[in-house]
Image 1: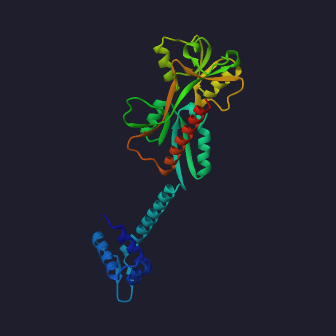
Image 2: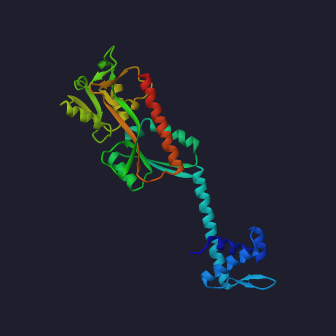
Length: 304
């Protein structure tokens, strides 16, 4: 293994054609400079300089080494500058994953806030369900994801961000005047629109329906949250979805009621691979998402 400092000294001596001048520039003794060059020559097994009392001149082997050493040092310095710029959030790239329901509602505003602050940071967002998200994190295609906790996924860390209630969004035809909640038993008798079985927030709903032996008599399944909201606004059906997915303020033709008996809730997590560190840019994004989502849920709770 060759000493990087010796190579740097070699380049300076070669540029100045003088051991004395190199010692002055590098603030070292001339003997120390000479010792480093001698050590380098011993390691390589060739003489690098012709030395006379009047001049210092590169040998043919020295000329050859100089070309390689200059390129290597320049590449190293460029790499160090890039790393420093990354640490200072001047450059960088974030690849992250998110469940579709969040990506189509509250997440875009959070991402826009981050990019206004960090214009030079590249951003890649992938909409993924829970299983595909873990696979992408494991393959290091994304740095982290936002989604539900997956039991027995030992290779991953799940940091809870929000714990939020499910609401029923009722069109006027199905309003319950004077009510501030609705039960699951009442909901099964109404036409409803729910997320498809691939959506993360269906898990809690299906579990409670099975536990109570309940089935919907009139249910439509859709993929996108925006489609659910459109069904409710049109008066076609009652939408069942997490509270944070409901735009604020609630449409005046809709009634938003938390679901009780049982109370339905879901927890969203920031998911990372165990042992993996985030880049400075990804860490800042990670912290902003936690702050904004927790604030959104707290405001919803206060308003409710």
